[in-house]
Image (cartoon, rainbow, N blue to C red; front, side, top):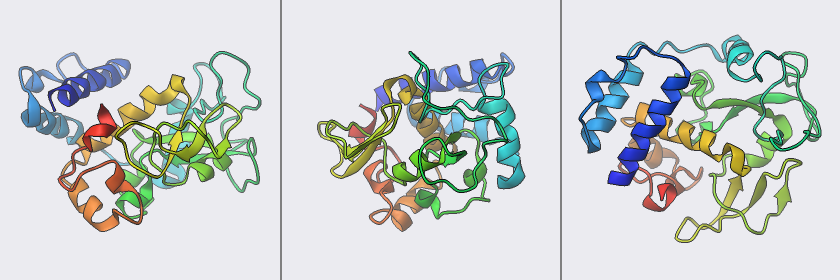
Length: 233
């Protein structure tokens, strides 16, 4: 677990350094380790958290959180190709879903931590928490469904930018279907999951109990709300 907490602190330091929070934001966590560190980080990021509405709040926030700098183009981690030219792009508001029948039709609000894992609410604090809601291709979002992220060697479906759906192939990991984003964005999704595991640490055990089995949350989290070890190795 030591590796988990070191990684947790590094991830939160990176997230909030980019957000330019006050230099003293983490002062009360200095020197803490283990569960005490996780609890303190929970307290820090929970205090003053003001939820936005799902509609129009999340849509409106994407003008700040989900566009390439100085553009109105959605930074879609399910379609972007950092080393090349994407096959399609989405313009903020103009290409907002709506309905879709294939890739490139529109972008929607992807709960990277699937909403089915906490009961399906789109209006709860976690349902509108922008730290795990990304603007993504609606069709690819639908393909991803509520499957956990994993490693896919033999995909049954591959998106235009190379994101893959298929059986999880990570050694020692869960058995079943996983979704693997391209390498360039795995860190973004990992940071979102570590955030959720910390911000909602007190709620996670009940989510695993209520929604495990049917909705795959138990493939990622243990009954005590901590990650299954193979998921963060």
